[in-house]
Each structure stands twice: as structure tokens, then as C-alpha cells.
Image 1 (cartoon, rainbow, N blue to C red):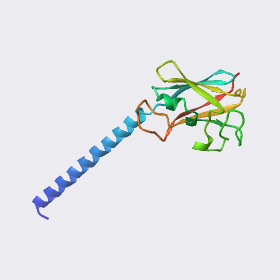
Image 2 (image 1 turned 180 degrees about the vertical axis):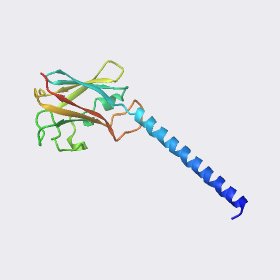
Image 3 (image 1 turned 30 degrees about the vertical axis):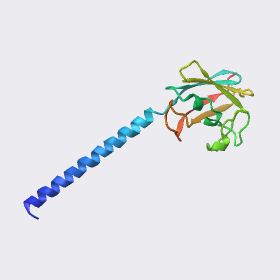
Image 4 (image 1 turned 90 degrees about the horizontal axis):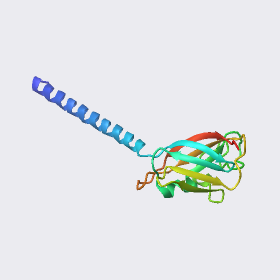
Length: 158
């Protein structure tokens, strides 16, 4: 290969490398943007014997925030769920084992759609360990999301 051919080859390789690197940076920025566009659980606390308060790090679509199908309560000690739990310790989240309107009502607190109170139809067992898992919640007007919004463990305290 002559000097001119080698120069062209080097130029093509450099151009390809620059193109691939810029696409990689673009993909990384899209992933980071997507992650910041997803509301995440920032705080979970028990308010009373049958109430939990969920706080998100940013406003959420109201219809998603109040939908029991977006919330799961996992027992961290029992193989089969009892009480408020919908999952046993080894169970995985699926649409058939979420909370339901028969177990809980959910309402927004205030008007910024970051804080929600879950009121269960039965008491949260005192001294029992649970894990709350939230999925599918989006920002207002955002497209559907099929991932999780975080989880937190808690122990019944009333």
C-alpha cells in the first residue's frame, strides 16, 4: 500500500472512531436523561397503624401515583404473604400480585403530586418487616414506563 492509501485508511479509521465515540456519548446522555426523567421513591414512613406515606423525588402522573397496581408490599420473613403483604419473601413482582383497591386506597397529599398516603383496610402488623416496591410510575405527561421506581424496607411500628 502506498503512502496515499495509508493516509486514506488512517483518515477513515479516525472518522469511524470519532463517529462511534460520539454515538456512545449520545447514548450515555440519553440513558442519564431517561434516569432523571423517572420519579423515584425518596421517603417511606408509617403514619398510623394502617397508613404509609410515600414521597417521590419529583412530581408524578396523578393517575399512576394513586393506582394500587403500581405498588407491592413484600414480606421479608414469610414464604407466603399475610396481612398487608402481596408478596412472599421469594416472590417476584408481576401484575397479578400488586396491591388492589380491595386492600388499599391511595390519595395525593397537597397539589404537587409528590406525596401520597396509602390507607390499608387492615392494620400493618407491628414489628413485622416489609419491603415496599413501586413500579411503572411516570412524570406527568410522560410515556409509559416498565421499570421500577425504587423500594424501601420498613417495620410495622404502631
